[in-house]
Length: 95
Image 1 (cartoon, rainbow, N blue to C red):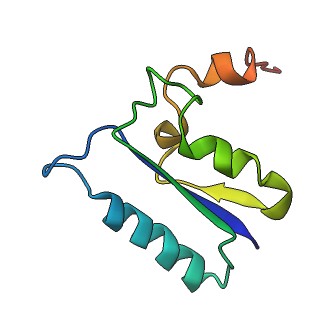
Image 2 (cartoon, rainbow, N blue to C red; image 1 turned 180 degrees about the horizontal axis):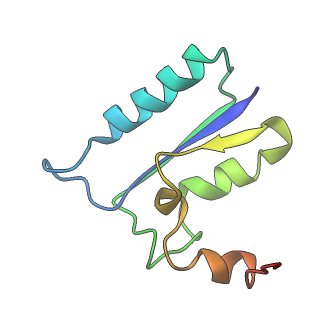
């Protein structure tokens, strides 16, 4: 597998998990699974809610989607919060 890593942190403060720790955890996961990291982008001090998918680091990953098989992030909220539906269109559900 060829993952891209994305690290987002709303606010870099002492009480939060550091960007370095989040990045190291993703790198360790990829190494443990034998995956070769093809790209890394960080969005530090960037809100996933107010900016949605419009932030500096994420487009660098999205521009390289043909080179990677997946994007590894800490939690889905690290990709985007409530605005995900707006970015990707309305959700469809089947019953």
